[in-house]
Length: 124
Image 1 (cartoon, rainbow, N blue to C red):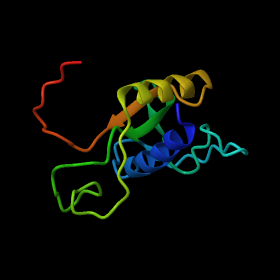
Image 2: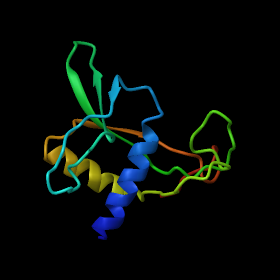
Image 3: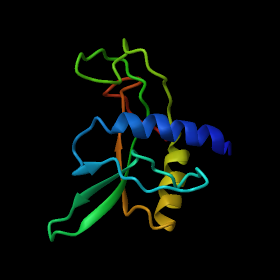
């Protein structure tokens, strides 16, 4: 596994996810002094609240910021000149489990651009 490439994807796709305002607070400042994968440095971890008032930390990322649509309001629109990236399903699983085991998160908030078709049937 290429950890530098995973870290680069995490930086791109966590930063892009901050525009989805459905979590109570994005932009946690949990720092790792060695700049390892546990460094959320302003993006990647969001906090939301359960029905009983408990604060829950979530890994907030996009699966991909590649999109076939050109919605004027969206940062991932196809005409926007941004650095593109995509996680594999296994990379998302590995990241989520590793952050969970380190007690950084309690769950995953996953969103995505639409890179093929919104009605595509997955056969994995």
